[in-house]
Length: 321
Image (cartoon, rainbow, N blue to C red; front, side, top):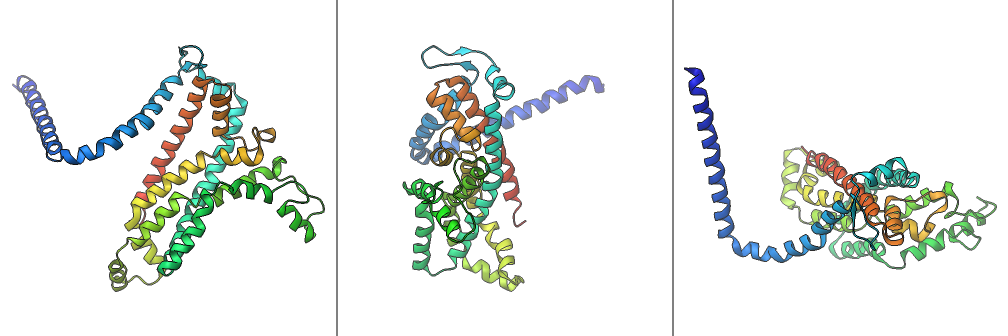
């Protein structure tokens, strides 16, 4: 008897599952119809995002499995581009190592510095806070920033750093900061950290300014004894959205280092000492026009960013719990 009724029970469960899914779809469609005006307002952004972000990513992913030199039609070659990257391309492995070093050192440090600066600046009076925010943020978008850093690290006696070090007797002859392999990576790390006060920094400023002051008063009543407890139990849990946005921007900036190395250390840099994945992508995509190979490089970089973002998101979700 049990054997005869089992299929009936399974069929009943399946019918219930189908009915539940159908009810959920009907409810979702009813909610969309109810709020159709909101979806119409979102439609322009969705179209622009899909056309200029989502679609290019999907096209690049597809091209990564082809040989495509722009002049000829793409030819499917499977995983050959990825095999060549990891088994035959020594320069890519150097670029991957340099990118990971920069991401590990500049990503977390720049993220923490950006938040701490924002936290300290938020304590200032309103007008002073606005001025100091401008002072900290403006240089990161200044077009002449690389010229200033190049002047500082010029490898002769006229370079600002060399001139001052020689004046105080610290060195006897000028150092070639941007051509000697032993100096290049520390110099790039310093510049990237300085440039980390970008959009994430502004997001932290905005997040801190929107926290209700009543929460701090309630925390004082509940036993919060110092500013660090206030930061951990009140400030951070109430700005997780901004923390996540800042983390995404920090991850993108740390993995996408390329313009800094190209402007300061040349392209390619000496012995590829600061050659990054973005530099390698530029080489094959914009110079050699091997678009299939360049798409494979871009895909690996994209997946590394996504994986890191997921891991950081899990950490941020536990902050203040």
